[in-house]
Length: 361
Ligand code: KG4
Ligand code: ZN
Image 1 (tube, rainbow, N blue to C red):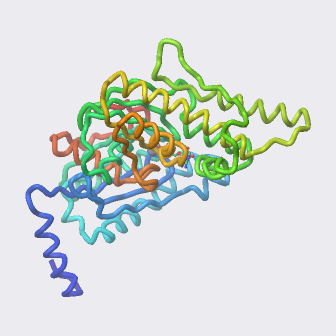
Image 2: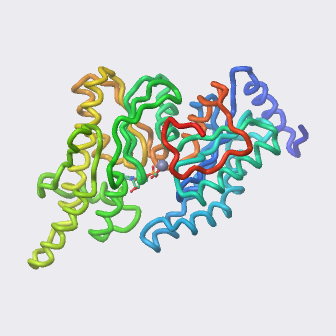
Image 3: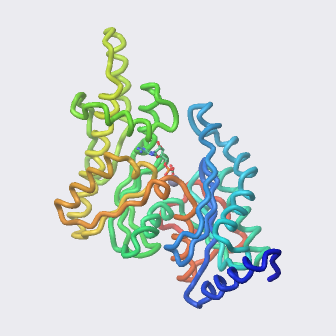
């Protein structure tokens, strides 16, 4: 391949020889299910060669949350530059890619469609296989990137802005969802409580920070349990309880302490996440546990699980914060394990906004 710069050309050829070993598979992955436009190049499911994320937080902050129509438009503007940057950072070209991975659900339909259309166009133009990935499967697979020794089976708690799932990861691509939220997702509760105490969007990281200055025992907020569904979650009662607390303070003219609210709310969420997850580990007898999703980067969540897993002699895995929130490297990791099983999609792949984990369409 002709390059303007001869030195670069030799370097690239050497790199190509290394990559073309039969056991080496390069996936270009695309993620656009919500408000991040992301592309990543991942080798063999675990080695991230590039990870580019273009966040739309600034524009959605103006509206206090994600505006779907704006998200779709921004994805269209950003997707090509983001993919070009991912290839550049990985020092490869389209020729070097073995397959295209893309999130096709769940998520905002217009946002998903941008990534899916882009991935289909690339797969067709480059004549490469197309692998549709479930967004939650991506979050779970983020754990493979930095924990090279992690293999299924393990229990995984997925806590993000849109989902709270307790999952048995039986094998690569094989899942049983044993618990889920009945109402708000954990991240959604963080965002709503943050808004109520004037912290703005996205609230999770802001509550995390403010909670460090507060007393987690100051206010007794409820820990919801659901009769007959020991692994299911509910956070809307907790959110209402925080709002009621604020209202009643305001009505009585009492000055409330925002840091105490943040710390006590966070503790209530953490307690429920820990108790449900530990129950699942005890009942399965498995000794490997992972967390995933945006809320998995919460410092109190990480500390609580680090402590209890140490005490219970359970191996605990968690991704770095950049792989907890939405990114395409996690999609590349998940796509690789589908690809090597021979699971690929046709050009009729569509966005599926309510795709269930473990379901393949
Ligand atoms: O996984 P993610 O990027 O998007 C979804 O798939 O939903 O998660 C975003 C969510 C937001 O609700 C955000 O507030 C929350 O993750 N989050 C956090 C933290 N960082 C992000 N929640 C609590 N503590 C954090 N440090
Ligand atoms: Zn996500």
